[in-house]
Amino acid sequence: MKIPPVKGTRDFYPPDMAIRNWIIDGWKKVSLRNGFEEYDGPIFEYLQMYQIKSGDEIIEQLFSFKDRGDRDLALRPEITPTLARMVNQKISSLPLPIKWFSVPRLFRAERPQKGRLREFFQWNVDIIGVEGALADAEVIFCALDYLREVGLTPRDIVVKISSRKLLASILEKMGIADKRLESLYPVLDKKDKAPEGEFKQMLNKKVADAKIADKIQEFMEIKVISDIKKIIEPDDKINEAIDKIAVLFDWLKRMGVVEYCQFDPGIVRGLAYYTDIVYEIYDKRGELRAIGGGGRYDDLLKQFGGPEVPATGFGMGDCVLGLMLEERGLLKPKPTGTDYFIACVEPEQTLQDAVKIVAELRTKGYSADFSYKSASLSRQLKQASAQNAKKCIILGDELKNNELVVKDMTTSKQKRIKIDAFFAELNPPKAD
Ligand code: HAM
Image (cartoon, rainbow, N blue to C red; front, side, top):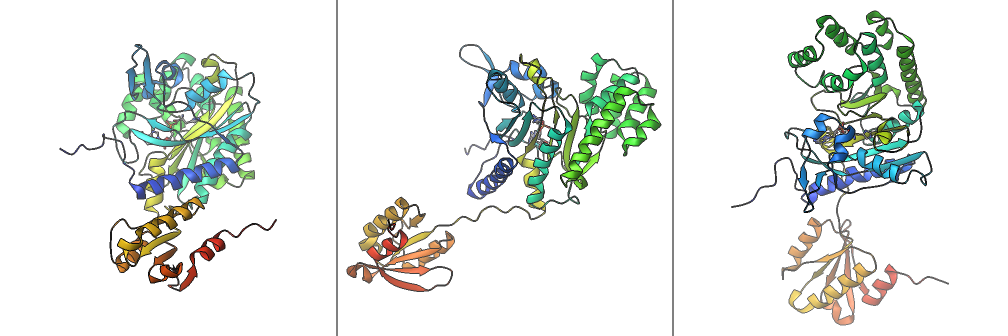
């Protein structure tokens, strides 16, 4: 019986691996040019870490297990709790602000579907220690810097932005007490994710007064911030939240990415720890789940036993992004290729010389390969083309004179050269 891969996981055959590397290399390059440093943590942590502040949805999706010492552990479903733990651990010696990024492999026991798997990679970009909206703008810019570079325009994607502070102060004014908010957020987060009827049912279960439930939905559907007045008379808290959103949009405008961004109070985020600005990035065709999402989580470090330090950041998965880029013909993995392919006219007689040359080329830093099979020269040249070899070294009769033939695989031009001269040309001795 052939054993299949576990549901919701992926096998990365070399062409898939080339795509994965291309995506991750792009994320890393953009993070570095935006001034972020890379970090990582363990793939499993104490289960308790995800029970502190991530919310019920994540808890339900944990792959958890006991170690031999009967400790409860879980595979990481996200890296933000690890980041909070790591920063807290060294808070007295780490200079603030911290600008860190990571590309963790994550695990969530979700029902696998298009763009949602049980194992995936997620680009994380976070700034810790900066309070103002400029830091939120900077992480959003970083996400867009990447998405723009791979060829996605404002016609393809949108960053939908809102604020939990705005939502909380509006709900508070509608009479919903602070304590109920935390359990209401995951329901509101489903507004555009669950079927309309289902959302309404969930909302009515949480908010018994149908008039208030309708008002909440009305608020979540407004398109321009000034329309808030049509639903509720803004108080100081509401105005403060509105001002912060305006400042964020102003920064995004200065950074030249505002045309990707849109105010959308329907964005709430599923995770429990967000405190203020929140956003999700979507494909405008609207068929897929979010490409990425994030926001401000100013209380998380404190919840993890540290001091009160403001923080903001986002996560972007490789699955939805990969699908989107594939649909649009924007996947451009680096072409694979060999610098030199060594072919033998008489493999039985010259394989040893070929292997010696291959080893020497590799030692000098060139990629080099040869055929294990004792095949005809034309078959070996076919293999060289299939491997995208730039040059082919042909070992034939000339070897008796210590010479080899170098064939340029793009121009098909050939030249005879002494083996010593060939290596000397490759690595001319430094004139000192
Ligand atoms: P999240 O919204 O849970 O946020 O995940 C962010 C992104 O990760 C999603 O938009 C999606 O692209 C990808 N993702 C999530 N679950 C899956 C899945 N099962 N399969 C494939 N892709 C998935 C967080 O994880 C936050 N910790 C992000 C963050 C960082 N907030 C602040 N800093």
